Length: 194
Length: 194
DNA sequence: GGCCTTTGTCAACATTGATGACAAGCGTAA
DNA sequence: TTACGCTTGTCATCAATGTTGACAAAGGCC
Image 1: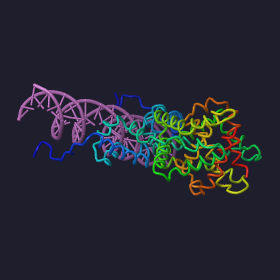
Image 2: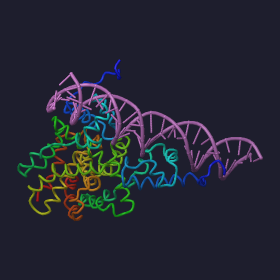
Image 3: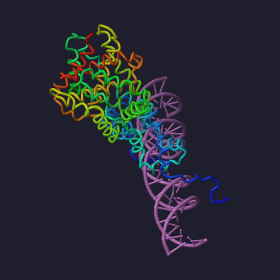
Image 4: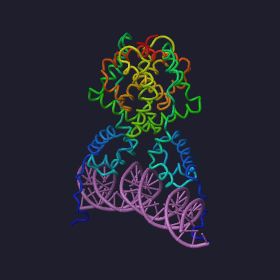
């Protein structure tokens, strides 16, 4: 017997271990949220010691922020015609979870909302919403109070997202998506029109 | 010396201790949120042993749910005329923090949002929104999709509230309240009109 | 005075995020 | 090869958390 009977893990390049931790964390955080998921659970799923998680990501919070990043490029329809943009945006948002990256983004955004107790998380959430929703719109809107109106649209979209994926309002989840798109889209349009 | 040199606290009726804990918890939870506030911090602020907190409220989560209850009676303007109700509701929501109970309600609602990782909290949040926003509206709306429309209005109001008090969008916080009321109110009205 | 419920106190428990020491692998240079 | 140094993995440990149970003492009721 050598000094340590338990088989030591064969050495791996740091990138492999890191991405294993990343994937495990993304899944677990997305499902259960920040505080329900412990570092040891992430480590176990990644097949790794808990201390390695901290070594690679610095802290649980940084791991969370890094994995729950929503990397959505600005919504494309915001470059299109202003006519009917309200419905187009809402349709885009409602149908997001049907694509792979969209589902990840929605999950991440919801997780950020639910963990926004922490200052750093709140800051990330704020800049994310600003970059994805508000800023692309400000440049397109005409008429008075353009900036405020763009941020109010962002509030509307955030409200729809949180109602469906944070609060999980059963009425909205069961509703016909086309009705939601038409009704809510028109309400959004009201803020787009000058 | 008797067996215990430190002066024991004079006995108090349970209601007094309980309400001291309640007040301390309400303040701390409202300021910093669920996980930033420990039981021992609440106990210290109430001048009480940590074990008493559990004895009186069962668990930290139950204490949180009990103190972060929003006891807003249904919004009064929802009983008024449908004409201009959108602006009236938004004005009510925007001006809530100016009253004592309103400020407590907003703080509690925001805290519930931020702690909605936990199933029990999410359930409370859902029924609260349903009772305060959606249900009173369903009875008033005419035309098709009344229930969905009412819940979409609730989503709008939730979005405005979270943008201001959870995300804390600086643009909205700095904006002229009258502009917000007028613009967002009209968008809400769009969902009220049949 | 005895008895029982209520109120307060304290020590402990398991679990959490995080740290630091140490061992082992692997390449490079002398 | 040997020696050094950097990287990777493992472990023991720390302080803090929510929660529990045992125990002390106060006060009301017979």
